[in-house]
Length: 353
Image (cartoon, rainbow, N blue to C red; front, top):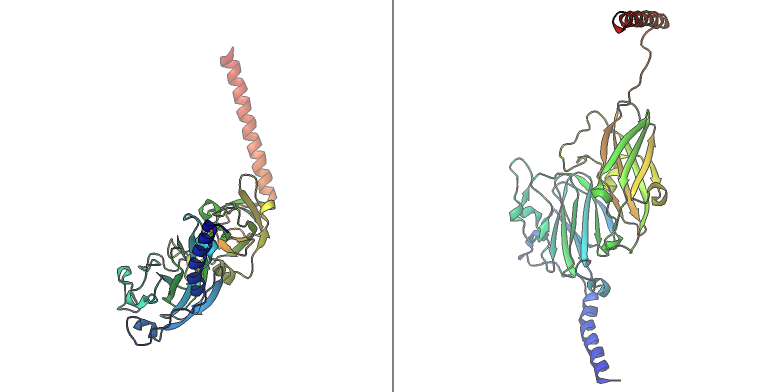
């Protein structure tokens, strides 16, 4: 073996040993002496759960409680990706209620939501005061009930996550380092709706994509339809519809509908230009409906589009009087028309010659 080859092997071994050692280590121990991480001992703080790459966790959470998660990634292939693709997706979707996401990189402590949020009549929300957080959800009230989606550089191997509930809630948390497996709704998630005829509506949306491409593809589109009550109104333009009835997250749609209306395969629903269509039948006249689409990839990752509210206003023309009245009106109208024609002919003879 050449000296150059031996040197390469030695370098590889030296670099691999620390990585292998790190992979076998348990998460950092809890702060037991009540020091800088004393907030982790609050009774509202749950124990830490490790969430694995590509995993989606569903949980219920009580008001003012915090769930903690630990994520680590030592995948050499992932870390060797170009910077543009070496990223981490952290996706928090409320199914019901209001939840906020707090994230810290590299080193403990876990984020402390109680440093910047206090509930109750005399409570406060101060985004600048959030301790042990590198980034977090919008907590100032502008996006109450909205999902939180972060796509950040995968610049460290350890991540410490806290999810705080401002009211009794349920949520899903997904973390993905293989970002090419995560579907991205086309057209920024916009859906168009058009009433074709009475009792029938056509939905139109743009085909979902992936960044980078080639990792997976769209498996199916799940189509959701739900009749709204007159009291179902949006409380915040960032939320669809409101925290108690969320219709723009995957779990929110599953919670608030009995089941999906139908499913559409991309090959059958979408044309060569990436425009997809689906028809909804049985729409009641003069009622409001919410429609939405969920895209699922071959890897099992799912993402909801933005959704749309539509009032079916197809005009139904019905006979509003008796046949006898209609016949009388027809005779009168015919007589008036005949008189107009006769007068027109006479004027032509008088002035036309």
